[in-house]
Amino acid sequence: MSATARNEGWPDAVSPDQPLLDAYSKAVIHAVELVSPAVVKIEVERPRRQPRSTPGQDEAPAGAGSGFVFTPDGLVITNSHVVDGGGPLRVILQDGRVSTADLVGDDPDTDLAVVRIPGAPLPWVSLGDSRAIRVGQVAIAIGNPYGFDCSVTSGIVSALGRSLRARTGRLMDDIIQTDASLNPGNSGGPLVTTAGEVIGVNTAMILPAQGLCFAIASHTVRFVVSRLLRDGRIRRSYLGVAGQKVPIPRRVTHHYDLPQASGVFVVSVEANSPARTSGLRDGDIIIGFAGEPVTGVDELHRLLTEDRISVPAPLVILRGVERRQMIVVPAESPAARS
Image (cartoon, rainbow, N blue to C red):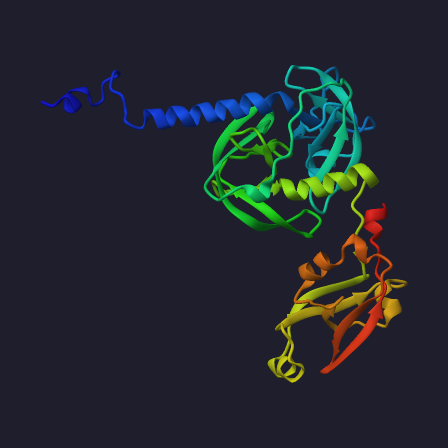
C-alpha cells in the first residue's frame, strides 16, 4: 500500500492544495482585520408618536442596515433605503459605542447616503478604484445581516457593468455582481478586496436566487458622495414628461436614416415644465436630445445630467411620421430640490 493510500482520509494527511487554501484564508483575514473596525450598524428609530406595542419594552427599529466610516471625523457611507425610515438615526460601532447620526445627504436614484457621527478620530477605510478590478477576483462583504454584527462572507466578482433599477424606478449603472452572500441588513456595508480597499457598497440581492448579489461600484460612490457633501443632494435636469419606450416603424427609420429602432413615446407633459414650454405634446416620440439618439426612458435619464440645467438643447421628435426639432431648456429636477 502506498503512503498516499495509507494517509488518505486520516487527520495527518496534508492536501496538496493546503498552501493555497491557507493563502486565501490569510488574505481574507487580513482584509477583515483592516476593514471591520470601520463597519457600523445603522438603525432608524420609529417616530415617537407611534405607541409601543408592549409597554416597558424597547421597540424594534423601523429599519436597519450597515455602513462604513470613510473619514476619521465620522462620515459614514450607506444606502439611501437604509436611512429612509422617517425617524432619528442611531449608529452602533464595532466596539459597542452607540451614537446618534445626522443625515448629510441622500440620493435615492443611486441608493446612496452619507451620515455623520461624533467621536473623531474613528477607524476608517478608503475607497478603492472599481475600474481596476477584474471578473474572478476575490470579493469580501462585511455587514450586519439580520442583526448579526460584523458578519463576513467572501466570493468572487461575478460580473462588472451590470444595471439595476433603484427603488425610485431609475436605472443604476456600473453595478458589480458578486456571489459573496448578502442578506437583509447587509445593505450599505462595504464590498472589499483582499487589500482592504472598498470597491463597492452592497445594495441588493435577488431572492430566491442564490449567489446573485450586487454592489454600487466605488467609482460611482466617489462621485455621488462628493456631490452629497457639497450640496446635500444630486442635482439633475428634467424635462417634465412621462413616457415609455416604443418601436419606431421601419419605414420611418429608413426614410429619416435613424440610427435607432425605438424612442420615447410621450404619455403626458407636465404643466409649466420645460417640455411644455418647448412645444412638446402628448403622443410625440422623442428620438434625440442634445445631439444624442434616445432609444428609451433610461437613456433619456442618463442624458439629463446636472450640466444640462438651464442649457438650451435640441430635442428631436417624431410627430406622426414627421420629424421635427425644437429647443428645450431643461430645469433642475424638483426631486433634487426637495
